[in-house]
Amino acid sequence: MRELARSTAYAERYGMGGAILYFDVNELKPINDRFGHAAGDAALARVAGVLSDNLRGSDFVARLGGDEFGVIMPQIGVPQALEKAEQLAAKIGTAPLLWDGYPIRLSVAYGAHGFQPRQDPDAAIAAADRAMYRQKRRNAS
Image (cartoon, rainbow, N blue to C red; front, side, top):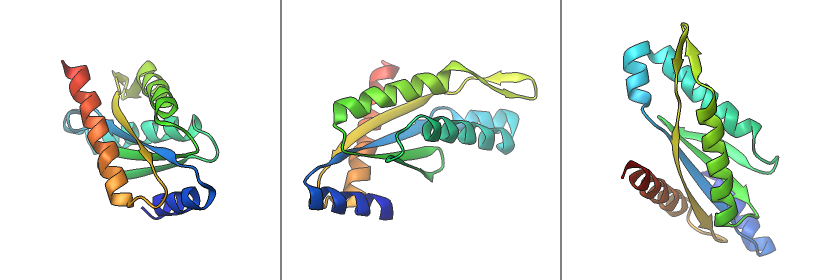
């Protein structure tokens, strides 16, 4: 939240916004239940690694809690941020996590919200979360 407040203040000072990506790891509870929490932790580490390794140096990745991650992307529009989110989701889904010789397929749902200068960080995160749930519902139908 502190980094998002900093990013919106920067956006105000320089007259440019950005986007927040919100990622939710699908089916983490069944992974924990079937393979144990160490496997769930490995799944979270894999997702965090893919996010961190495939973003710009100016972007900021954080675990929001549980199975959710946020990415702050300064100076980018929502269409470009969604395109990047789709690429990241595909990369997360390409190679399974091997746990005790068993392949665990990982996938994420994602959403994006364009933040504005001085936007309340809680409201921006909530908007990105709602966008993620809209995407999750579209993919379920």
